[in-house]
Image (cartoon, rainbow, N blue to C red; front, side, top):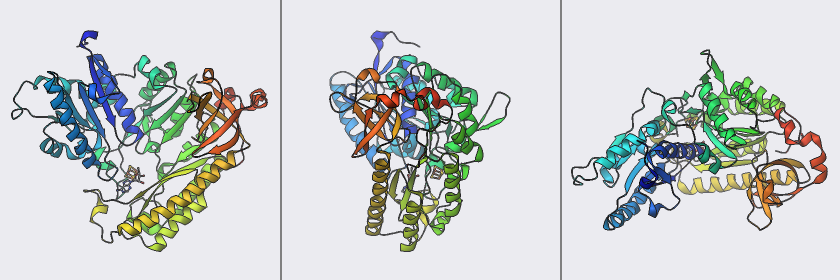
Length: 486
Ligand code: 5AD
Ligand code: SF4
């Protein structure tokens, strides 16, 4: 039922949490586009508001309920003007608390989990159809099943004009769910078991993105390096092999992936880092803790030494690999010694950046029932010390880039007039004096300084003339500057 332009309705999606939710929100917009829904940036003007929620952070559901309180007022105001507003809650909070949301917030018309996005147009039609009923008779549409069918087979491919609007970089979900069951984490419950998209589907979506002007793709998955999609012959393909196939797409310049588990960092993927210049030398590889006791309690299924061995292998394959991680402080039972072990592993690895969190219980996860919960004041103090160490490492990493020449994908206007900005291979923001005509190119920039959280670059003629670092040669692993930067 494609609508005429006169019937165009306005869609506002508020996205919480991870990059996978950003990707999912775009897919929801794609699914609704043929039904006349056009994305808008002002919630107050929308006919349909979707909250794409995240359950990883603490108080996630409280944030959703307070947003729903505001939406209730907006809906009442729209009704007074003789208009209407449909409200949907999507994502992991919806998956985990579907019925509870419907009970506590009757203003909601639809509650649906991440596996139901392809059914969104039907849900919207159903919800809109029951608007004329008295509120007491109206029931929200709830869809939190984990269906057998593959939602990706039913979701429309990103539309060319939408892709162009999305710019030079894009996310592409290749894998969903997780079978690891770390004892602190809700993901295996909200996103379900690990599922990989078939190779053909991934390649087709990547080609579509590149045709639309995308130069850099970040492959997404809760456990992305556990990817094992099937190829046309029915053979299982790992993430490393998938990277080789993606590297053949003409026009795709850069490839990233996130988030990885240390146990799935297999030799095939490490070899891809050695062979493919397109695979950026930046790896987000969470370890969560440096203490074997905590790693066991967290059910991470690897030791500190296992992790360090993986880091060594990656560095032997690609010596300029920059590392990033996630850390949890104050997991139940964490002693001062355990925490010191975490500081030690951070010191030993040397991170370019890292995310750190105070442990907070997630109902339904094994961690929630453990004895030895840590006092808030202790968690605060540990988090502070850990972040001070990571901040110092990030600053040192940025400083180590000064004097080097790095290829930068120029993506946007800078904050200051006359400046443009982009990203280094190591995901650092870089800005420099230059024309907006340069946007879309990968150019060698001499790094001449740092500012808070970013690098300052200079377009150097000498560097431009040096064919070793022209971006045409980045299809195979060329050394931009092989010296260790992390
Ligand atoms: N408490 C604190 N941090 C958590 N994370 C996941 N679950 C929890 C929790 N219950 C963190 C982990 C994970 C990141 C995405 O969020 O570090 O890698
Ligand atoms: Fe959660 Fe662990 Fe799976 Fe990561 S690997 S999504 S932390 S259960």
